Amino acid sequence: MEVERLSPPRDEPWLGGVDEAGRGPVMGPMVIAGVAIRDVTPLVDMGVRDSKALAPSTRERLYDMILDTAEAVVVEISASEIDSLMSRMTLNVIETDAFALAISALAADTFYVDAIGPVETLSKELVSRTGKEVTARSKADAVYPVVSAASIVAKVRRDRAVRVIADDLGTDIGSGYPSDPITMGFLKGYVAEHRELPPHTRSSWKTSSKLLDHRLDDF
Image (tube, rainbow, N blue to C red; front, side, top):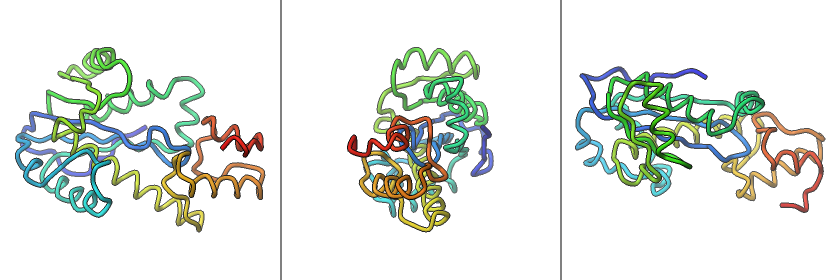
């Protein structure tokens, strides 16, 4: 698990935001993004919002604008790395580790983090590990522009990774989520033909176990 810097450090950014994309999919990576900026006004003016509320083309356009304006980093965790880590820790711990890496890599001292689960516990853990002021909040990507920006960066990187996987496999795999009929159609067909999961699939997911057990009627 490593941090990738997407844009250079800025002049003493004071506010940071962290969000993830791809926590639940059965295929592809989970991406955690951190964004830091001195003044959120440029983010507001460019129209950042929760990435789920934006069209893909809008996310791509805003992604470039965010990198031109703010300091940004990502932590991309592949399906195989998630499987390896899940053998000894929970997904929440994996995500917390990635959040801490992203926060530590940014110059800001104050952070807002989009969180699932007990937000107070996550806030205290991240404060302890990074030495920075961190507030975790559910749906923070819809409240804080800097978290909205992080949401967009994470989502664009995740979507790009899925497109690379589709090219590698030579077919449309959909979004990678179990709720996506294109993804499930691909997985069912692949497992039926090869009797194993395709590359880039999270074998530690219940969806994968059901596929390998040939209980396709469960979907």
